[in-house]
Amino acid sequence: MDKNLLKYESNENLVEFFVEEYSKNKLPIPISFRDIFPNMNKLERYTHLIHAYPAKLLFHIPYFFLNNTYFSKEGDVILDPFCGTGTVLLEANLAKRNALGADANPLARKIAIVKTQKINEQKLTKTLELLLQKSKLYKRVEFPDVRNRTFWFPEKTQIELAKIRRAIDELPNGKYKSFFEVCFSNCIKKVSYADPRIAVPVKLNPERFDKDSERYEKIKKRLLELESLDVFEKYKSICSENIVRISSLSCLEDNIYTKIISKNARVLTEKINKQTLIKDGSIDMILTSPPYAGAQKYIRSSSLSLGWLGLTEKEDLKTLDQKNIGRENYSTSELKDVKTGIESADKLLDILFKKNTLRAYIVGNYLLEMKTALDESIRVLKNGGYMVIVIGNNKVCEIEFNTQEYLTKYLQSKGLKLQFKLIDDIKSYGLMTKRNKTADIISREWILVFKK
Image 1 (spheres, rainbow, N blue to C red):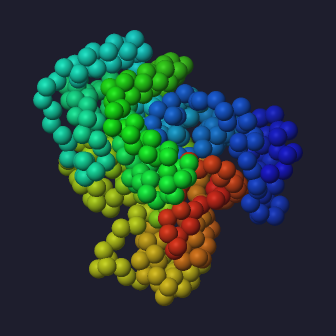
Image 2: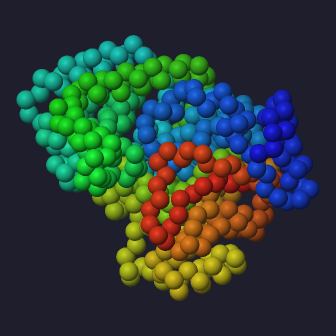
Image 3: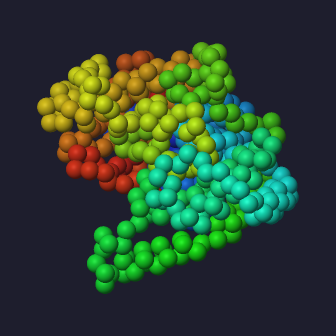
């Protein structure tokens, strides 16, 4: 990144520089949002850390795009059609903008709502005390439908989790119950045999390492600790930390809101589970980080929480996964030749289908579904409104899949005007993991800025 970028006194000035610089040569501008906002790197910011989730958007990015009057103004409506756990929604509210979100993962939707709500700190503290007292007194428990439950949890842990869940279930529906459900979800993986370093559940196994190694000893120690872990105390600790985080939202203005409106970025409705669509041209700005093609197993990474919270009772994990754009699981009967209508993408797909039919179909169908989602976003965006997309390329069969180029070409074909492109290297992308020989980790983020 050019260090001269640090001299700009305001976000507006920097945006104007980006527009002018890009107009000269049409080359992407290297940038580091961590360097531009160094004070945000070490500090915990409001409720962003209320729950772990794979591939969270760096909050510096929405902070930059929302804290100026170039793209939006106070009171405007900001849409994130791939909202995940609400990074953009929270930053929009903090910048005095209203926020609408959509996501296919029911756990992500629940977290996004909780992390953007003001909730009374004293009442949360009192409710937590009573909840724990009640849960410890239960003699009878029922276990939810968690796949391979005994594989992932010690018997004592299963019982204590079930008692906590029962106490939460008996709370009246509303934001307090949702808060304690989110804390419960965040506790689950922490008290399981799952490796905390990996997004999807992978059981800790010391035998994968040399018996004289430090890693072997650490895992053995961890497994021993899990057998006697006090789940009630762990849950209390997580709740207490999150109560402090929630209390930081007292600064939010009462007239500013966040709403989750849809489970599907391809069908943006006025309310979740309703059929009435958002009106054309009703959104002031769109800021989103769509899923990458086959790069994250969002549902699988949430599987333990989804099971314990009972969020898979109406739909199993496979059904939930099928609703995600960028998914990897397809049956052989689904695999077929894909044409996206994006010339450079179709040329690559022809090559990929000869190398690996499954991986070719994954990325080809991803583009088809992304086109539908982008069409819906374009429909609801006001004329003159901005669409900011944060996306990454990845490799398929050792060949670069240039997602940002394909989405750029498609949006331009729909009449949107590209204002500028930025590139930010990912220094630490928490839960991203390299998957197999035919795919690759994502090492850079592209920020694409369009105007309708």
